[in-house]
Image 1: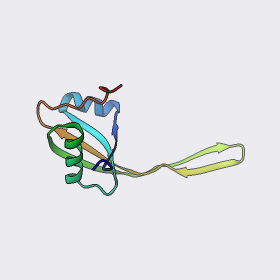
Image 2 (image 1 turned 120 degrees about the horizontal axis):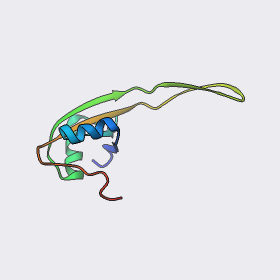
Image 3 (image 1 turned 135 degrees about the horizontal axis):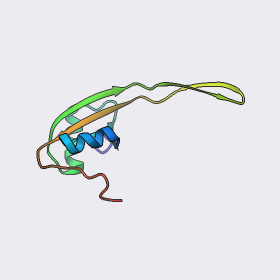
Image 4 (image 1 turned 90 degrees about the vertical axis):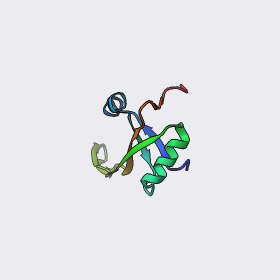
Length: 97
């Protein structure tokens, strides 16, 4: 289960979501389903998960100009999970800093 959650997502939008709706974002393994994600979050953070939304994020094509000419590439794709917790539960990503 430890390989299901890759890292938490900390953005302005997700921070506002956490304060207002008690929702948190995570980058998860591509093959993980909602049941596995729920078990992993509950085990890692000792909270009760009510709802999970998953999103497959495609990589973007990127290009840049260099001395040797145009270099094109692609960013990696990943799977994102938005987890809504039960009333009163909370995750603090900054507690071990």
